[in-house]
Image: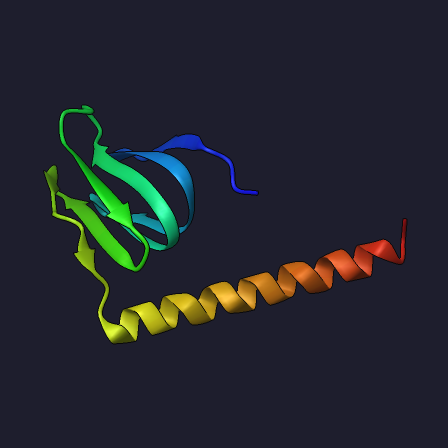
Length: 101
């Protein structure tokens, strides 16, 4: 089960309801992409927020919050593939750990 939590970067704040997400921050820009679930993505001052749902993304650059938008087919396919690999690795790790318990 996914938990709710808050997260912040120098440019942004996130209120994660229950989501599989990717977050990157570099050079005054913060990007978020959601593969499953939803979250609230906003400026660090907490004045402006966007709700980002499954297969959507948003970013903050130079203090400007972009509207949440549907990911392109290529981006959503790549995001889905990364999450599938991640879930597979997690499952393999859990199976391996069972042998040492």
